[in-house]
Amino acid sequence: MITQGIVIAFLGSATAIGLACSGSGIGVGIAGAAGIGVLTEEPEKFGLVLFLQAFPGTQGIYGLLVGFWVLMKTGILGGSPIPLTLDQGWQIFFACIPVGVVGFFSGWYQGKTAAAAIGLAARNPEGLGKAIVMVTMVETYAVFSLLASLLLFNGISL
Image (cartoon, rainbow, N blue to C red; front, side, top):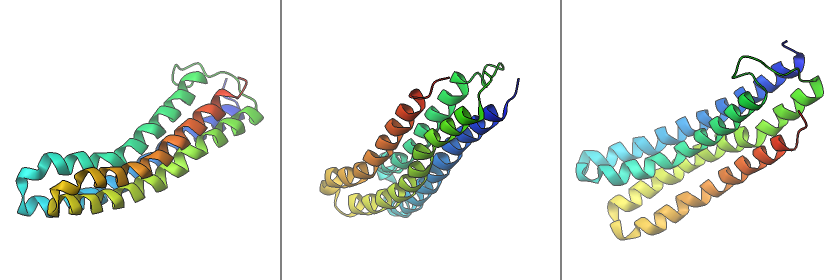
């Protein structure tokens, strides 16, 4: 039976996936645009550019992880949704917010950082390690939001 709670939980899942994947798409696009500029001059740096461009894509993975976890635990993915109360639905919705919102912004800004890192690595290959550290710093907060969403979701009695 489809309850209002299950509809709200489904919206939470969609929010986690949609926002985090949107941020990743923006970030990967920003880094990719910088990478194409480097590759027009030095096509042999494709591996390096691809490695740095891939970083902002992880936020989308985190959003998918939380979103699909919600869909599986609530039975939506299996075709037999459990009858959630409206309160439970809202709890699930709000548990999905951290990974969605932080994933959106950190994916976007990690793309900007990765673009700068691509420029640094193209001009000064010895600076690659420092560039990776800078890009990884943004990732830290995406991981924190993933952890927060999973802990919040697992604290809900279904």
